Image 1 (cartoon, one colour):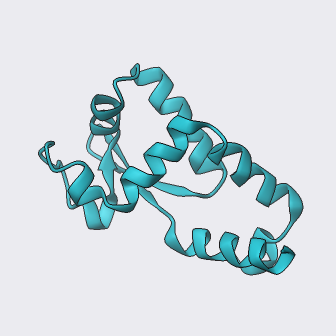
Image 2 (cartoon, helix red, strand yellow):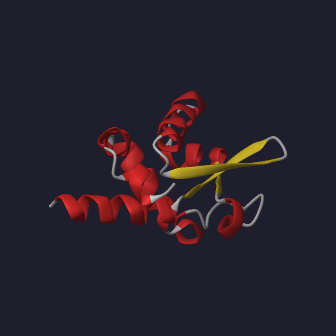
Length: 110
């Protein structure tokens, strides 16, 4: 996404709504340091490339699979994470470029 898309109010609000949930915010923090935060879980694929398996996010959070899937879908709709399928597993990683753009858009407003 380019800066123009991120700076649209509805795009920014979608991101803020997704981050307003404490668990989704915690997941974003975990994904920032995925290798460290998920060290207790054997990676299915390279975390730096595809991210963290949703089953590992579920295990770490202690939430139901359906809840974690719903939370990750909200973060993905907001453009904050990207998903990758590896076999039957979905992996998530932060969209760092999108987060930088969102940060710049917020800084421009303030």
